[in-house]
Length: 244
Image (cartoon, rainbow, N blue to C red; front, side, top):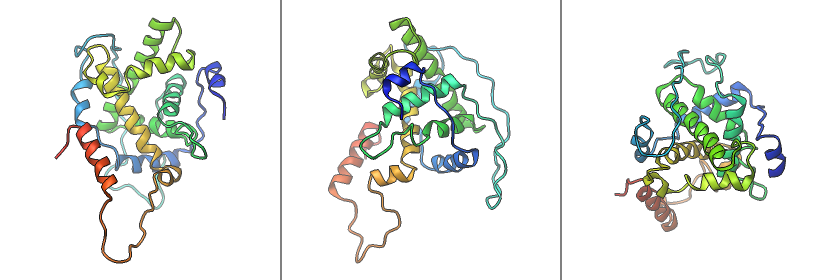
């Protein structure tokens, strides 16, 4: 794996190695696991919300048909839509993937596990939810590029690690969602982060990292979730504004 300095030198290049069959299979798992947090919905609409710069894009809609309601699963059909992220956009997603889930000991990073390929598959799909994500993620990528040029007079991919992290730090935390300057990129980054994490934890390495055992029989009565697990759950629900 290249060092951070090497990736800065190569402009965050990312080489796709996941097959379309693999990424489409992963897309199905991801579709069942990802939900847009309620706090993001209004933050991603329109260019007139909040202050600060935000790319004004008019994306050509993806009009390819999806799989439909009854796809052939025994012999899967060929991918019905093309992948849409340009190399620079995919490189930015790869850099952000490594920031969100870096390598930790023997656990690979999201970038190493080819999560950027799955994000590319996700935003290229012709469904309404994925197209909403495509719009916000492409605007986020444009915003990162513009912000890096404003701050450092260089693009996001060629900026140094510390420079990139200084931008990400301004949009990575909950308080940024209430900021007039950073609310829109913070909302878009939160959505991309959710996709990256969901894709990562769909991998065998990700499920192993969180100790998920799958369908393992329990002797006796089900003991229920631990107190620690319930505290974690209530903390997340509170953060999402869904506390009971």
